[in-house]
Each structure stands twice: as C-alpha cells, then as structure tokens.
Image (tube, rainbow, N blue to C red; front, side, top):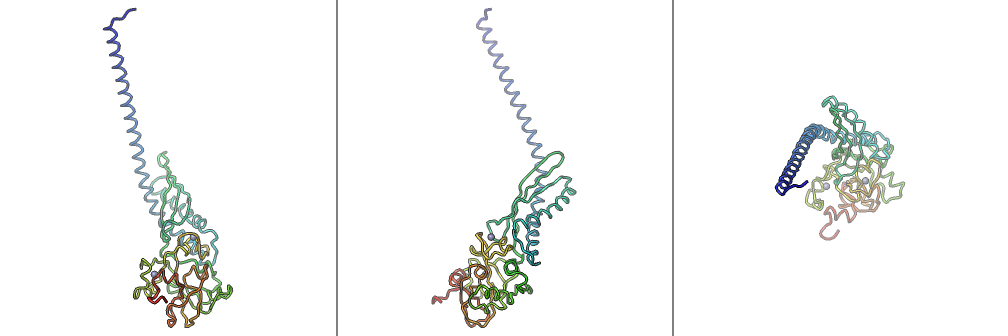
Length: 314
Ligand SMILES: [Zn+2]
Ligand SMILES: [Zn+2]
C-alpha cells in the first residue's frame, strides 16, 4: 500500500482533531462532576455548620456548668481527685441530654465525646475539646469543636479542698470566713504566729482584678478597693482553677492568687498572705501598716509586684 503525501496530511489532521475533541470532552465532564460534588458538599456543610455553631454556643454554657458541679462537690465536703476527669464526666452527662434536644430540633443523629478539659492561655478560662458526630439524610459529618468557658463568678474551691469542711470554714456575705481553720493548719505545721490568722477572710467568688498592671495597687485607694471588692490576681506561682479543685495550693500551670486578709491587732511576722504562700510556699511577711488591724501581711516580692514598696525602701 502506498499513501501519498496529501493522504498523510489528511490522516494527521483528523487524528489531531479527534484527540483535541477528546481532551476537551474529558475536561468538560470532569469540570461538571467536580462542580456537582462541590455543590453537594457546600449545601450539606452549610446545614451542618449551623448545627455545629448552635452546639458550640451551648458547649460554652454547659462546660461552665460542668465545672460548677465539680466545685459544688468540693463544697459538699467530697474530694475531687482528678478535676479533668470529674468535669469530663459531668459534661458528658449534660451533652447526652443536649444531643437528644438537638435530635428533636434538627432531625439529626448526634453523638459526642469530651476529649479534654484543660487550661487555656488565660487562667480565667478553661478549654474544652469535644468530638461531635452528626448524621443527617445518610450524610455523616464529624468535627472536633473547641470552646473556652469562663471560671469568673464561680466559687474558689481551694480553701475547702485544702483544709476540708471539717476545719470549720464558713461562707457568707460573699466571703470565705476561715475562723480557726488556717490557725489550726499553721499550728500543725509549726508556722510562726498562727494566732494572726484567726478570723481571717478571703473573697468567695473568682473575680479578675481590673487594676492592671498590678503595680497600681500602690496608688491611693486602689488596694482598699481591691480588698473591698475581693479581686483575684494572675500569678505564675498561684494555682489554676483545675488544681484548686484538687486542693493544690500551687501547680506548674499559670494560675492566680488572692490575698487572705487578717483582722488582728497582733503585729508579729507570720505567713505572707497570698494564698499560694499560705497553702504551699510558706514564707513569712509583715504587716504593711502595723497599726491597722486589717492590714495585709506581705513579703517583699509581693510588695514589689503590687507596688506597695514605700519610697524609703520599707
Ligand atoms: Zn487587685
Ligand atoms: Zn494547675
């Protein structure tokens, strides 16, 4: 067989045309497929997104309730050995009920599992991670949602977790009234001047001090107002809320501290009144104003932190 040059060109052109058409066809088919798939995902994702957002908002409230339940356990006189597990357990129970509510509300199947309860970057907030599985119309969606819950406004669990309910601590007028609890603890541990801490008080509810930076506590009227309102302060040495539930006076996490205020005419050196010092670090301080019954007993490094060092170095 002999094909002339004209025939060769014709066959070549037809072949190129067919290949081009094939490529275009493949491209169009893939594009259509891709767009359709994307549409389906987008549509269902939007539905799920709404449900997940609603669930996240609920998680913030329920997470805080789960912490408050652990605090209540401490106030009932029961120990919390592992606060993370205790709060996980409390929250899983609450989420089970919430899941049923969501199933009725959105016509979906929901299952959830609390993965972790941990410190966030701020000592005033606890971070929750929850794995959520949602099923609707044979489409499964699973996501890990994260939410911070504030501990502000909750009761400080440390005094009761540390000294126990049998120590005689009372709570009223938004305050912890230590009565003889700290004095008794100091006698047992042979600390100086336990009698200074008879009838000492501290704030009951966690409230973040607005006088930031703290050096402003040396400005006129600031310390008085801070004590009157009962504020808590960020502190690397103070224990975090999760460790407070377990009765730990200090911990490796970034936490907070509160002043335990004494009310006494005694002028002796005694434990410095930051709560991590009274319950864990155990070093002494002296009254800022020896003639004031309500004066704080404070060591020099805390005086510096709060701007309470006088000009003449006292
Ligand atoms: Zn303050
Ligand atoms: Zn801690």
